[in-house]
Length: 183
Image (cartoon, rainbow, N blue to C red; front, side, top):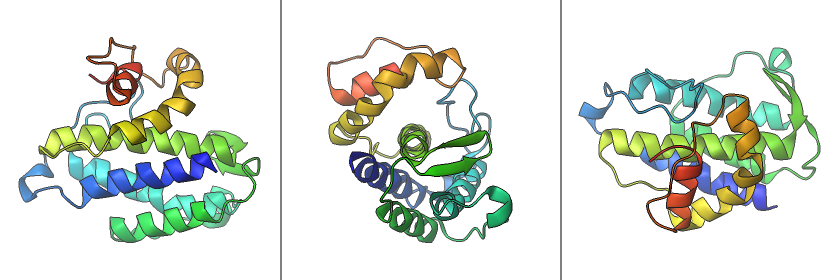
């Protein structure tokens, strides 16, 4: 499935940034990447802790458990959480199966696309903040655009995406970042 492959790419992108945060980068504050950004105003350390908790939920969410059934996830080293999340995504066979999110139920495919966009934009923001090269390349950006373009205006209307910008170049990466208002 395209969404699973793209999730794998986006999840590896955020993991690559998290493991490369320099010692002096943990206290920096990344730019907001969403209109209502759960990471906004947090330090890199706080943002990574939030992402780790989110990553820890993925296996139980994809297994169809409610958050109450799953209980509070154990949060360990980010690379371990990321590997478990990617393994759970590899096991997806029904993109229409239900995921029980905090905001309500949605299909697995939609849940994974939300994770893809969140991880891709967070990887970009964290990389910029800690002075690392962005792992968001044209290949990942093109794959994310497939899902985000048809959802962008709805997500902007409900307060998820920032106002769109004009892309600096016609590259997939610049078009994606501009569509999300991250320039």
